[in-house]
Length: 261
Image 1: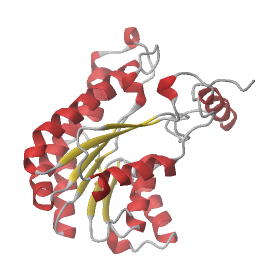
Image 2: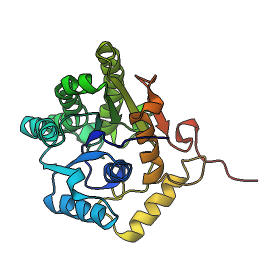
Image 3: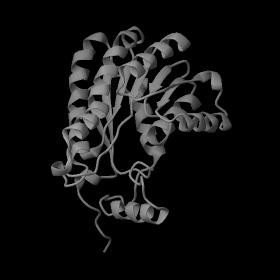
Image 4: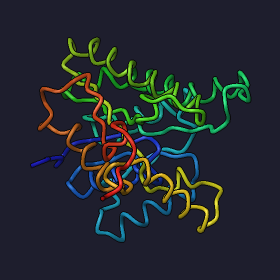
């Protein structure tokens, strides 16, 4: 059984989607959680949702700001330790996508994607390390199967997630001597607003339906299914796992869906 009673966890990018679901499941299992996002209203709404589902507000802290901002990173670590006394788990979930092709990207856009999806993870993880050493804690990075497959869309996003996968392995190798595990969870296509942003409801449904054709299990994943794996990797059940990139994609990397005869 995954036990988080008394554990202290930071989840970046947790005012919606996978991050929010993960934060809720941790809180439900007794953890104290610092949630994070850039939108104050979304943070407020997330906390209201948690409270409406029986979560005590005393178990929640929040930090608002860009994850790539050094001051936001310092606040995430310092305020969490100040309020809850320690840090057991860091879940690096915050990320952005960019759907233009390589030829359409500017250097500024490249640095923004890499800064949020890779550099912020490295920086925040380094700052968390002294605290995680004390608790023999761990880090879970949220990657994507996009980092393992070339395509003509979301190209800088794919590059950033491939870099994050390798960064996970390097951190795992480095931090092992400190007793800190580092792993990544790599989701496939999940039914969230992240892939349906700036579309109508009808367009979103069509987009989701199209993605299903790429998944051998003939459906998209759910937030719950991804958060289940994240919690497993963050728990003592995964105590001998480090440097792993755990794919949760319904078989998407294996090939497209096969129609029934």
